Each structure stands twice: as C-alpha cells, then as structure tokens.
Length: 98
Image (cartoon, rainbow, N blue to C red; front, side):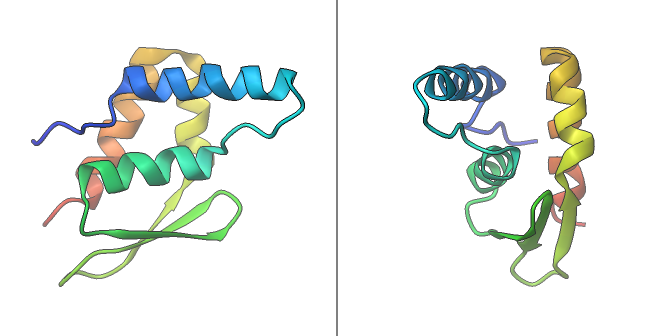
C-alpha cells in the first residue's frame, strides 16, 4: 500500500497545534478536517466533503461514493498513536480501489 505523505506524526503535530490554538482562543482543526486531509493526502483524486458534522462523503473516480463516520476513528485516536494509526489505516484500506 502506498504510504501517505500525511503521516501519523503530522496528525499528532496538528493536534498539538490545535490544543495551543485553543489556549489562544482560536478554534482547533476538527476531526472532520484532519481525516479529510488524511484521505486526500493518500488519494489525491478523491473529493471529500463534510455532509454533516462527523460524516464525510468521499467521491472516488470511477467507483461508488462512500461515507465515513468520523467519531469511531476519533475515539481510537484518543486512545493513543497505535490505535489511531490502525483506525486510520483501516479507513484508508476500505476507501482504496476494490
């Protein structure tokens, strides 16, 4: 499988920046935007839209669109980097070509 340029370390760094922004009174990035970036980093031809908070719709060229529920992945990420990496990789595997 092709490795994403948006690594787990980058995701963790974004989360740390988000916490710092919160301390400064600014809004941190949402899980929706973090996972959208992960998907488009892995699959640049896919289009990701937020259909509702916590719901991503992924348009894949030549394949049916898919919906991703963000909350279960976010819960894994809150448990730690190994769980987060596993959940994100599983999501990306489901989204790749059949």
